[in-house]
Image 1 (cartoon, helix red, strand yellow):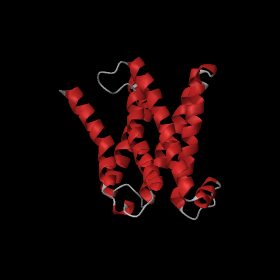
Image 2 (cartoon, one colour):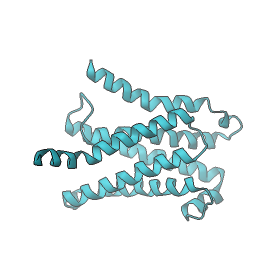
Image 3 (cartoon, one colour):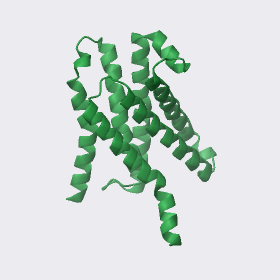
Image 4 (tube, helix red, strand yellow):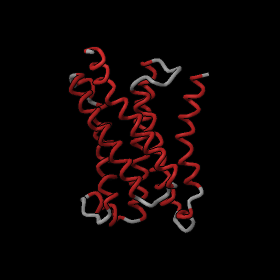
Length: 196
């Protein structure tokens, strides 16, 4: 019963913000490209919730090796959703995207979004080069980038008034920070427990 509850909760956390965004009044007069770009951003944040759980092997029914494989596939999907999000925004307003990428945008949310975007791309590049790096080096870099991605995505989402509905956005942000924080700090907590 416990595995069913865990998977049910995870699916709800992923689908809830997407379902709530479907009813957003901000979508009424928008172009289809803008709507797709907005939903890609919502989906990216929802997928991000899965990543620390998969990496730490905390999802029931998935052996560690399979969980890591799914982690890689979800990471690829995350890169794709970010590309669709930014690409769609580029099509609807190239000057705004250029300003954001050059960190000259007057909107603070764009700075955090761009930081998270580059961290996602850096993480994907790091994953490709994983076998050429020492495990400790790779792990430290991966964890640091993961922290930047989570922090950047959450701040970006909370500051922007866009496709995401406020209650689901705040709830997913809290869930994401909690899960990522537990997984990122878990090795240090285990070391502390062993010493005590």
